[in-house]
Amino acid sequence: MDAKGRVSLPSDYREVLSFHRCAEEFILVPAGRGDSHLGMTRVAHERLVSRVNQTKYKTPRQRQQARRRYIHEARPVSLEDGGRFVLSRELREELDLEGWVKFVGEGDTFEMWKPERYEEVHGPEDEEDAEPFEMDLTGLVDIE
Image (cartoon, rainbow, N blue to C red):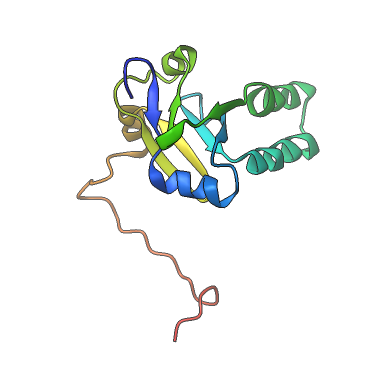
């Protein structure tokens, strides 16, 4: 990210946006405990809004908090040629971003983090003593 807040969206994420016919824009919503933001297509955001509106909350305040976070605080972001976009000063300060931005993809969404904060929350990616992840895919994938 440069001093004006311009960020280049990695090409993998631009391809996902293009696949969903929204190569010029995506939506950012607060995620986690306010230490990251979730980027998504407009269609994915519409699904999120629908879920927020259909969810049965324990209290009216919980409903209000969910609506505020995922609907009212959602920000459309326009992509320039080459996949660049500008993060507002407010958002840069909120996420304490300067220099590098970490993108973490999750299907048709991605998270944006301050790299150091991501490591604090999730641990280093190249941690030598990390246990290998294994998943039993029996019945889910045809293996011949």
